[in-house]
Image (cartoon, rainbow, N blue to C red):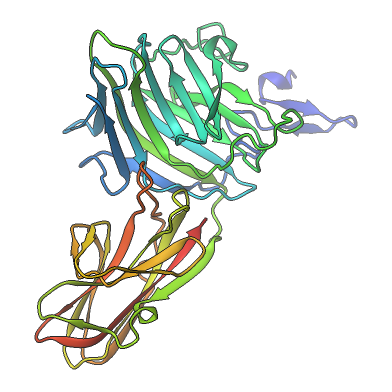
Length: 410
């Protein structure tokens, strides 16, 4: 029986036993059969809005971003001027755990190659990452290391050139919507594979081998990178050019351990007597954010601790984002990567993550904030903030304290 026609990768040992080696369609970046439940580290879809809690937007020149209502997509558009640019990038940088295969799945429409226009889709920033690129002349795959790009053009792809001549027989159509696939080992020197999911199957087009090959050390300085869509005019253009963003996911294949560094803070560190609250006025009590120099780190909120020493009732809320103002901000380092801000009197905007009520002289401790959501920084490096606010529900209150616990990934 011709076993090769039945079992992909079937081999026989020297003693005659059948050995089945998982093929590329069913194996992850570490050549382990994909039978485990994937653990999603980041998910982004644009079903209801442009996901402002997940994705940051940066516009340069005449670049614009438009949420396409009813299409679950967004349009990144550059105009005619040289230098027009649009970037959509996730705040969070999902942490990499050595020894696991990471899978990046992103959907979008680059459109046909256009002279003078660069388009990029992948997990990367200005310094490091992995992505697909149309650079005005060709489609290629790229490894970015410390701001330097190593690109391989479609004509030189080593698994399938996707021009109809490869093993799959597929000719890639970049004017159509695509599912872009990247899986990788990191460990500094692992393998990277690029491909497309077509008709429910992954067609790998190129792999980059580093172990036993590279002589420059790590192939990218960090593997904890944000998902990113980017379009840029490299020259004057005769017409507008669009890049369509649809959906993105980063998956740890084989689960995820709760690693990272635990940290905790309390407003007591900056104000031992507690905060005095004005009746019916929401007041920020404690805020945490990444320190300067740790813009590429991330943290995940775990728990809230709040204390009311007064005889009044207090309403407690936790917000992500928003703008602090008023008062005199006091910044206290509370861990390797995070700092606490106290002393401001107003928080404007933000998204409420949690709320509770405290009766007189009561402490509230909860781990209900446990989440897989990661907080990071904007494209420009401005850290996201998480703030505990308190509101005296009747008269003025005294002795309000709050603290947060998190897991950080510097």
